[in-house]
Image 1 (tube, rainbow, N blue to C red):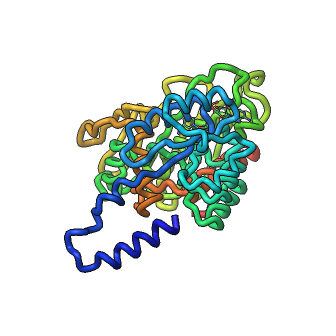
Image 2 (tube, rainbow, N blue to C red; image 1 turned 30 degrees about the horizontal axis):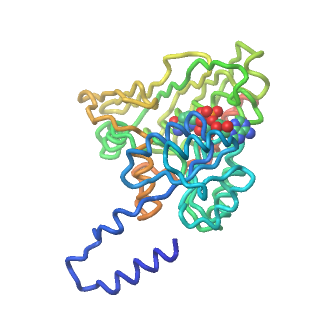
Image 3 (spheres, rainbow, N blue to C red; image 1 turned 45 degrees about the horizontal axis):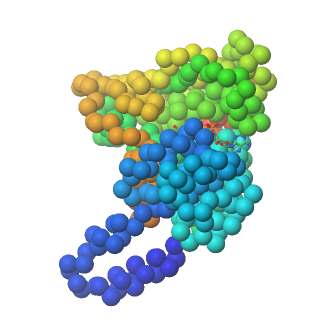
Length: 363
Ligand code: NAD
């Protein structure tokens, strides 16, 4: 990283005054973000596939505990042996100058250790949601990446989705007027009772960690403020499947400094729940589906949203390459602090479920 920066700096000095060598010098535009994916499961597989269409991000390595998966990925994506690691030896990635970033796509409880180790190896880190199991862990990860001088980003793919961004633009420009209300419904009926998502030790909770986080995160970017309080109620109809500490359904409410309120549902026990609704004094926006893999569908008070669908993970990885390599700023941020804010709200929602009280948050 440093040598590249120095090189750019030297080149900038040496080309100063040569107008045709502008900042659009093709060498820099073409340099890809070279990524190793850690965790070759369902979502890792989707990201790997989507990265094949990236302009700026390139899959160059893998980290997995399953040799047969490594072999299959090597063959499919032409990954050299020297860029393959397992969970025991991946700290050696520090010596590998052909890898810029590690994308952590393992079960939630492993993110904390995996992100900190990748940061200590001097690699930028992209981490899947939820960034960690709680705000304390999230803060550790933010600190570790700061200390290692690497970037920490969270795989919030909706932050780059065109219909979502159009609503964010309209809200920023006042087209909905004062924002009054947000509704976020996020859920699905979960299958296999033996999967890690239903194991408190690996998932850190239940539906809220996995799918309810979309309503939390969505409330923040749709309303455009941080909540100052939450209330929450938990319902459990199947304690066999949803054991202690694994939430089945949580309804939660959030209040914002402006007076806007949000009402949300997170569940592992109902289908057809992927809907955002934003209401303001002058207009409204709705998205349904709002956070699935797409196409996202929606409309506002002035008509349907028509922005074309692009594979979310392809766009995300190209945009993240720009953030990491060129210091671009995302319209809706995707850095570790964003992940941490969602974890603070998750902590508060669980506390509100336990206590039955309204829980205050720092704005
Ligand atoms: P998955 O079960 O399909 O894959 C998890 C991978 O982690 C597997 O390859 C598994 O072998 C590996 N793993 C490593 N150590 C493990 C351990 N100790 N126990 C179990 N598995 C272990 O899960 P997934 O759906 O790919 O989810 C992975 C992460 O990605 C989760 O944090 C999840 O929230 C996130 N995710 C994000 C999105 C999104 O749209 N952003 C979508 C799906 C999943």
